[in-house]
Image (tube, rainbow, N blue to C red; front, side):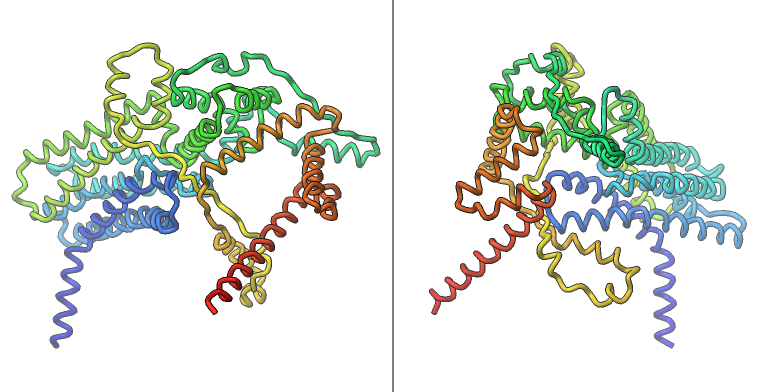
Length: 523
């Protein structure tokens, strides 16, 4: 008897607090995404990535589940009592905020590129969730004192959700490729050339590959003649100039060979260029690409951003003021506090998003384009106090050797249809190493030397032959002439794999010897 009474009290308590806890949980997930998602670009941590991934998946699920619970509960109240009481009305007022949560923060729209490809599914979900929120409005809020407030928040929530879907659409791979097709003078890298080579060879033609160097004029990049006294300004200017080429390379295309020549001239021959500046340019380009793929930046760097921030800041602020002045004696104090909390956090998140956007590299480049000082640029410079972190200086290292010799799970061997799940385990063979300054300097110096060698060796058929010759000479100087077959008689990709496995074996042997020496010293 006591147990059944306790169970009944627990059920009633949960029924009373269920909606409150779900809304607060949804709000907590939004705060976590807004503050932590941007750290994924600059800070490497397995825990951080797992937390963001889990929060990203839970945020939509909790908001959708809360809306379904709210609509079901209000429908039951409407069916049994024929009307809704003030307590139910203020609970129904939380529905537009859940729609706002489904729109997500500006710092993350997708966790991975595959999420961008699901934009159509999100569009269908938008239609369903907006319909559900409108159903809640007409069922519980129509004609109530909160009706006008709800309409304003529905407008803001719909705008934020539509922004997210539009960003997913703009960032999916197919849309990116289509947008680049309109650019003139681009060709696929390697693929189309090799397809034509293979086709002609199969037809019986004698085909040879010749390297053609196209010398571009000095006007290919307008900023090439620009001498910046400030290294930061110069780096930002060059990174933004090369970003269009970087996007094409990211998708496997390049506009023209002249762009490669211009890039090489800037990185290898510019008198101010060093390893720090070169990697700084690459860091900015990677950050810009991250923003385009995984955030709402594509919509925040246009005239629309002024409208959306004006609406998303003014509407919740007005609601906060008028709700404070409204008579609230019919509502529970807990529900009033939660409502104030929802409105206040919505305003603070928009302010935080605005400050992050002002401190971004996109706005920094916009400031560089403006000649002279103005009130707007001065205000923007004053508000740029949020740190804009870029690359974490960690690089991924995939251990092919460990993956190849691992013992495969019997379940995957017994059920071939689970092989795709086995492939997902490859992430456990990826390690991350700190990219130190001396490594940057070595890579930059090696790239310069290689480029100079390629320019001198005009007698060779192509640059790949030059690299093979250089590798063979290094092996001969190291008394390893018996290993020249690994670079001369092999295709370039196979040679890389061979030396990858050889490096892993040598490192393993050295670590075993080191452990043996330590054990001998202990003895």
